[in-house]
Length: 521
Image (tube, rainbow, N blue to C red; front, side, top):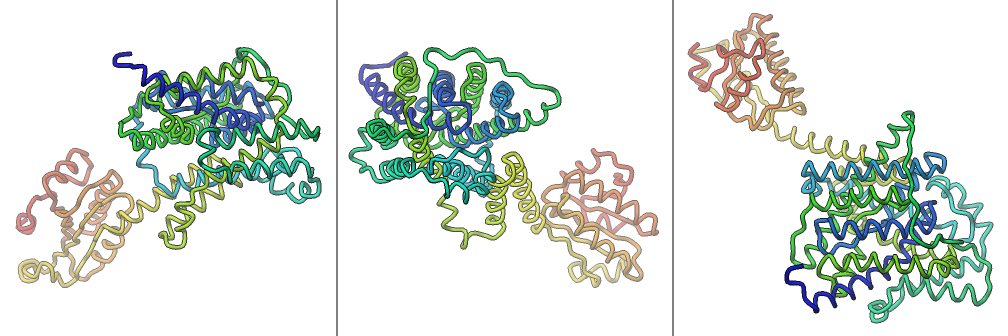
């Protein structure tokens, strides 16, 4: 590597090892929470972390299983009745779609996703993690879905395992209250994991634990699917691809702000996609760029891709040598760690401003949040985007000004020379959202007594879409039927756009570039 020095290597070693230490308890916890097992979390962290570090577009980014991606994978596993291979097919499709997004150069589009949609989705994911980990925190069996977790909560409260709850609360206390001076050297999740596990084993509490974790390299898995399930696999894979891409690129932006560098978004998507594809063949959880692990890597000295490679090699070493020790970790401890993750994912920035925020944005955020938690992740994203598009359409349509003055006060010279002429003045964007307004105006105009011709003054139209052109063509045809002469006055650009469509009624004979020229006909 050109220009690589001993000082850079030292920083990358410290950064990679520290990020690996932070990633270990999260990988184990995400693996258990997904239903695929702790080993799946480790496999995903190792494979994706290594591949994304080498092939991605952000030099210091640490990738691995994340809360949102784990929730989607768990949903896939539940949707296919626990079929691991079919859930891995979702990961495979997601990785392929991520590569496609990168090749299509869509990486820069992340900044165009409405913030209320991202906020509602991320807060919903955080709330799901908290809900799903409530039962393990109490010592009860985990639920398969957020709604099931809500319905079973009263029963679980009657089945509290006091020892499990105590370990879970101690874990929460450690991850929330550990002083920064200590967490700089020993990340609070790792401290909680080690300390609470030692206490549980020493006191022989007999708590529900992770259980055996396979040692050695992962086995090869072949993702499978049936044609009858293809639409569900594709929709879940698309959700993984979009969510993983957004998550990774937002983390890349954070890394840029800390390091004062610029990432390559499309290369990042391709690297993440290849990593997730490989995860599907080794039975690893899908993942994305992880913000907390990336910032830890940077603050600990990581400056190049080597830090990400060291992070993965560190986890691989632990998998090969220390997996039996991890088998004794209580599920309540992992639940406490994950609840902290869920709380951190909640978007407090917007939650604090809901009362002051514009009501439409607040409604979008609340709708996406509710659908994410109670219905379906795919539907939540789809509805959120549709609502945001509808809001934008409504706001742009309001910018269109379509007016008609029966006395022609805006064109006073028309009264004497052309008493039967009516003018509809159109300003702003003329598109599918504003054409209904124009139709209403025409209904008003052609009923005015003595109307002989109607001129559409489109000289201040910003742009036209296909709906507006066809609507204008239909209105011209209708005016011809009512023996009213239609004319259009437009800029040269709009005029060319109208003529290029070759519609039957918008012909060159009725489209003018000058109002006086139109009046002279």
